[in-house]
Image 1 (tube, helix red, strand yellow):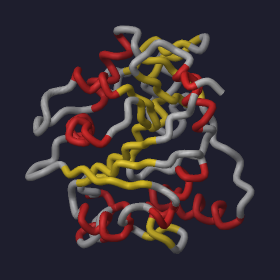
Image 2 (cartoon, rainbow, N blue to C red):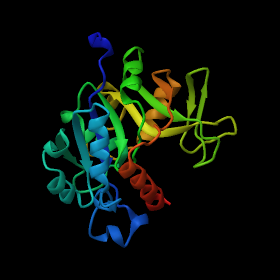
Image 3 (cartoon, rainbow, N blue to C red):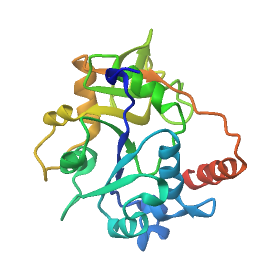
Length: 238
């Protein structure tokens, strides 16, 4: 494998939200520490990332984030190197959180959410990204408005349009919730400490032809513990 096609081994996990939909559970603990299948959710998530070949994680934290840091520590329990970036006095949104975390980020890194368990072939996706000339990659799923309202036009393996709010009938795919970004893409966001939304960044990258798409589907589950976890996870998210 050439250096150009090496896999992306770092992820930034956005886990700083208030988790209001899970209250009263999350009045005292953050969403990432809510137990699913007998373990805190983040335990499952970090184990998945290690299994998929990732080795470094930056946790972008806000609400009750100190509890997450205390539980995860340096990440050695999952075979990972974990560092932490905090929003500060006020929440700065998904884009602002990445800007805050920039000093800890590799040149290329995955962007994931603290309430998502996405099991697909990370290595294949990252190698595809490295074969392109782009500042970002969006994983997409052929949703057909089944799970949520579709927000992506993806045709002939090309990412043509993305919009989180201005949705049209031509949008049959959905942003799957995992992306890869080059660190320089963050130059398009406001300075550190200012709120911003990743959706705005993605809109601009797609419109300028600087973000590619990759269609994914979830791996079949063969491990009984993971099967049980996924059942509990779906109930938790409903």
